[in-house]
Each structure stands twice: as C-alpha cells, then as structure tokens.
Amino acid sequence: MSLRIVVCVKYVPDATGDRHFADDLTVDRDDVDGLLSELDEYAVEQALQIADEADDAEITVLTVGPEDAKDALRKALSMGADKAVHVEDDDLHGSDVMATSLVLAKAIEKTGYDLVIAGMASTDGGMGVLPAILAERLGVPQVTLLSEVSVEGGVVKGRRDGDTASELLEASLPAVVSVTDQSGEARYPSFKGIMAAKKKPVESLDLDDLDIDADEVGLEGSWTKVDSATERPARTAGTIVKDEGEGGKQLAEFLAGQKFI
Amino acid sequence: MAEVLVYVDHVDGAVRKPTLELLTLARRVGEPVAVALGSGAEATAAVLAEHGAVKVLTADAPEFADYLVVPKVDALQAAYDAVSPAAVLVPSSAEGKEIAARLAVRIGSGIITDAVDLEAGDEGPVATQAVFAASYTTKSRVSKGTPVITVKPNSAPVEAAPAAGAVEALAVSFGEKSTGTKVVSRTPRESTGRPELTEAAIVVSGGRGVNGAENFHVIEELADSLGAAVGASRAAVDAGWYPHSNQVGQTGKSVSPQLYIASGISGAIQHRAGMQTSKTIVAINKDAEAPIFDLVDYGVVGDLFAVVPQLTEEVKARKG
Image 1 (cartoon, rainbow over the protein chains, first blue to last red):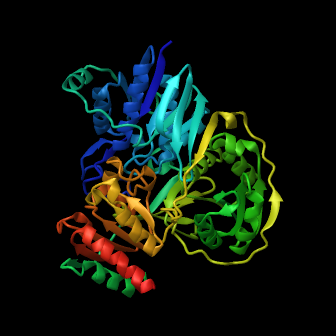
Image 2: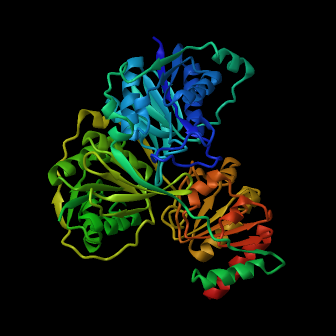
Image 3: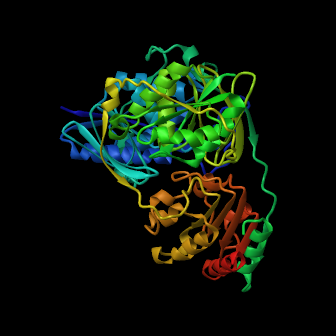
C-alpha cells in the first residue's frame, strides 16, 4: 500500500530582506520577496528520502497562504514532491498559529495521510510549535525536532537532540514528524525537476471546501492579538578600534569599565 | 488574587534558572502555583517557595520519562483543571513550547511563545516579543481562552519572594494517546562544566574566522576566563568545528546574555536573529566591513588569534 506523506510548508518573507509590519500589524508581504521557508526545505528533503526507501509512496506538499504562496509549492514540486494542495481564501489573512493549524489539520485529513512532515519552525514567526499542535489536533503521535528520521514497517524512528539529552524515539504511523536543519542538506531542484513541476497538479481549496467558518480564522478570528509593533531603534554606533598590538588589552579595559571583569 | 500556573523545568529536582525568572514574571499577573513533574519533583518545592510559589503541585510516574511530551501535557491539563488559573506560563525550551502548545489546543486557548517580558493588562497579561531577527518589538495578548505564554531565558531577574509553597500531589490520569511516542533510549549530554548557553550571563562565540575545530580552544579559554558559555555560528557548526547544540542563530539557540562576544563572525542575518537582543555586544573580526560591527557596543578590527588570547590573559590578570 502506498505511503501517503504530506509535507507542510510555509511561504515566508525573505529573512535577508528588510521585513516590516503592515498597518493592520500583520506581516507586510508587499515590501519584501517571499520564498519557501528554508527550514521547510529540510522537511521536503526528508520526505523525498523516506519515499525513496518506501516501496510505493506519494508526497503531497501543502500550504496555507496567499496566491504567491504557490511559489513555495512549486519549489517543493521541483525538488521532487508529487502534487500540491494550496489553501487560499481572503478570510485567512492574519491567521495566527491556532487558526492556521486548524486549516492545515482539516486539509491534511481531507488529503489523507500516513505521515505528516514539517520543518522545525518557520523563518518568520519562528514559534516552532506547529508540528506539536498538528499532532494534538489530528490525535496522532508527534515525533518532533528530529536530526535523523526513518520509516520502516509502519513505524517512524528518529533522533531528537535536546538541551540535556539525545533521545531515540519511535511511534507507529500515522504520525507527525518535524525535522531540524541537522537532518541533511536539502537538494537543489534540477532543470528536469523544474520543468516537471510545471505539469504537476496543484489543488486549490478554500474555507468552504474544508468546512471552516470565516470567523474561526483570519485576523479577527485568531486566538491572539498583536497590539503594537515597534521597529527597534538602530543601535547607537559603538566604539570600533583597529588592533595595533593592544586590541585585546583595550577590549579588556572596555569590559572592565562595563563591570564584566 | 488570581492563580497563575508555572510549569517547572528541572533536572532531577534541580530547578533550572529560567523557571525562577518565570516566577518573577508570574507574580506580576497573579499568585504562582508551580507544577513540577517527574523524578525529583517534590525536591523542587523549597526553592520554588523561596521564589514565590504559593503552592507546588507534583506528580511522578514512569510515563514522564518513557514517552515524549504528551504525558506532561496530560499532567499540566490536570493542574489546569484543578486550579482554573488566569494564565499558564512555561519556559521557552523546545519541549516547554510543545507542552504549552498542546495544552493550549486542549483548553481552547491562544498561545504566545518566546516572550521577553510580561506585564498585567486590562485584558490579561501582555507579552513583549522580539521578532524579525529582533528588528521589531511587539506587544501581544491572548484573546481567546486562558493565556498560555512561553518565556525566554534571561527575560526577568531572579528575585527572592518567600511564599508558602505547600506541596500537593497532583492526580494525573494518562490518556491513551500519551504513550504514542516511545523514548527508546536517552543519552545525557556530556557536561562541559560551562554554563548552559541559553541561560548564561556571558556568551563567547566563534565563527568562520576560527578556521578549524583545533582552534576553538582559543574561544573556550576566553569563555572560561569570564565564566561564560561557548557559542558557535552556523558556519562553524556546518563545518563540523563545534557541536550543533552550541549553535547561536535562527536554526540554533537564541541567546540574550548581558554580554555577547562574537569572534570571527561576520554577522549574517541568520546569526543576528539569535543574539541581537544581547545587552552588550562585542565583536572581533579582521574584516572592518563585517555587518556584525553595525551591532556592536565595542568592536576590534583585527586578527582574533592575536586579540582573543591577549584579552584572555588580561581578564585572568585582572581577576587575579
């Protein structure tokens, strides 16, 4: 039987660009280019490797986001995912993690799955809680923050490197997995992959398709509210000296003045 | 006054510093009721009471160690049901955030992670966060359910505030889902004897400029002279010069020490995301154009292999 893998990806503003908030205190997407969150590339990569090891597997890449978020799906398809699902609805604008996870969980259930894979965190919100929330919502085991992952005989195994210990974990499918940037370098799409991606199916879903009310999501329906966002003032220019043989001593003098020594 | 649940991060009864900081913040929004789980839970009571816990709810069972995260969520939910708190606060560790998030789903509440400050507001606690690589500061609150908030280390001072801290056993019944993810084995991280990276008051980090694992002792010696933790940039970790557990940055650890010393680190956005909220920032780099110098309070343009050992000697001499 085919192993059904759903990879959750996010379309995020480029972290190397100048990111800002819009007037409604949501992320300003007009000011900076968007792309597939770098940490989700590791999730796509692990999905591809797990699919390679399986007799028969199908990878669906899933995102919730505006029209442009199709770019993130295309990137994942060009890496080798088989098909894509795009949940897009004007009422989703401003959804927080609880609202977004509700939509993802419904879309995952609708798509059908044995394994859900996500990155360890997004590179914009960076909360790192979505995979655990999905596991809770779907009622399946979470096998999260893995630096190594494998699937065999309906069991997912992985290594989780925590603050105080490294753990080997194991759970039966279906399950939710998240992987860290230590799981293995993500492949670059080949020219052939990029061409093939253009022909792969992208299914569009809206809130009606998922049986979700507009007031459960979006800015107003979210579980949290941002009251203010203030740009951090530029640091006042520090003292910069050129080392001419006494740089270490001068630095020690500075640290002593600040009472660090 | 309303009660506030505080999830206790401890290792065999030794309470980790971020939990004590959390008690300082919890007292601003209510009366802290601590929840300590697993081996040594009862041993945490004295230090929690000293820092303001009016009550300490404890539970131990093999499930907490043998299965991932969910048994702890079951226990925190039992505490939530017993107390009906005004808020639930959890330290922002990887596991802490997952526990908080799953609890939030169960109790129908919103969640805020990685707060760097917390204050009481008219509509519940208001959390301050540093976002977009700390280029913005936001103030947010939970608008549905009981606020569940995780707080980063070094967000508040540890303050003594003696309270009753009466220990009560917490009755926990584990759901069938709690044994879904088995911990097959656990290898404790070897202690370096240095402070934990996210908790340290001073962090000394090395990057590409360290140019090899064999040179990292230069960074370690400076760290040891200052009683600091050692960090590394992604470039240094990806090159295999230093363990990933010491990586500072977007995909590693986020630190906010009193003093951050970056050596041989250019200051790419990935790294800045993990250290930009440090109180005082110092950099040593050969390249005068390195973006890290835009962030510094004090920078030395020079060879780290000349500057860092000289600084180490000077620190040792001044400390006698």
